[in-house]
Image 1 (cartoon, helix red, strand yellow):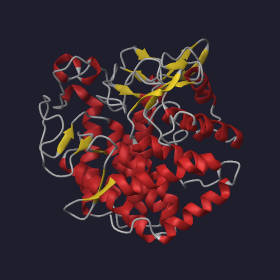
Image 2 (cartoon, rainbow, N blue to C red):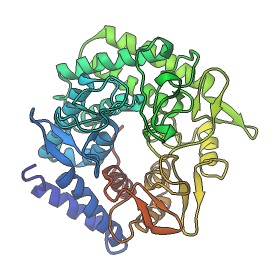
Image 3 (cartoon, one colour):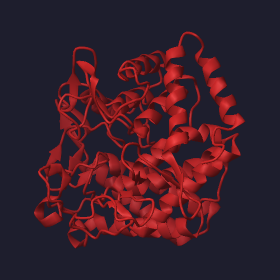
Image 4 (cartoon, helix red, strand yellow):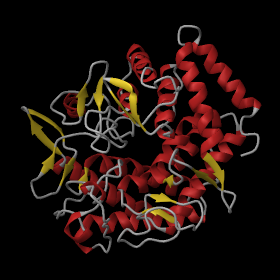
Length: 427
């Protein structure tokens, strides 16, 4: 990526540095390194002149991660045409990927056969991993829409976008009745969360109106197939699609189909996804429509904590607040308390480890500037001197962490710092 650190990028960095001032100089030091790192090291131009985004220390592009990695640059894209062009080309690559296979979550830059080619599913040389995750369909639409909302750009809404949307909608509809789906996934491994039970179909579910997801945003298998945070995200994104196809593009048939789908999924969340715990209503993490549900949360977005961040619910909503109190308490089996930190973790990483992404979400889902600052400093203290934000860390020993280069976590720190300074992305 030639000349990616333009004068406008430098001016923007100086603006943020000035706003941080001496008081928050340490926060700016981390911001400076992480904000520039993704631009300089994670972006690669592919054979179609689109932009492929490395997730970090794994040489593949995740549909989810790449959207989150680019999201903080939307603010800069308002004034920097080069950055806007980069995000547009990332969206185009995402829809190139979606057209290849809407069930895949991670892709290779070329048809190079890298990744998990021995998995028992319909693999191809383009695919790094084919774990079906509902959120991986939603994220590219979110980035495409937010690019338009924040900059006015519409070049991303091309023929491949339209064909990708049609494939996306077909998959979401099919997976409302997962028993009729051809999708299966099995991996020969010793990690139960890396494969699906029941001959690759996952645990049985009943119809709810919601759409099934084989895996969580952590890439771990769902216990029950209706993942509430991902269905929340789908409701929001289906609203974006209605707006796009009624104001920018013109397809009333798609709008009507999407509206019906959105209503069915949301009705399912409200009927099956809200449960009572300790005398109060809150959201479950997963349900199966057969009466079983899972009370927990995972730091990967979408999560229950992230419901206001993705635009599903107001942060003051009573059921969300009940859910939030549960998430940040020992009742959540993945809330951990250590000697120096406490916070959300994930079954994806060692037991007891806390996720900085989860810490950032706590700040991004409330309005108090002081609390945002507090969380930024807590995150800053987890870098172990690297000035990079890691996937997870031991709350008793920050030198014990996972993934030294995890671009998504870096950019969540950047987004929280920008929010703390009053720079908010238009949703």
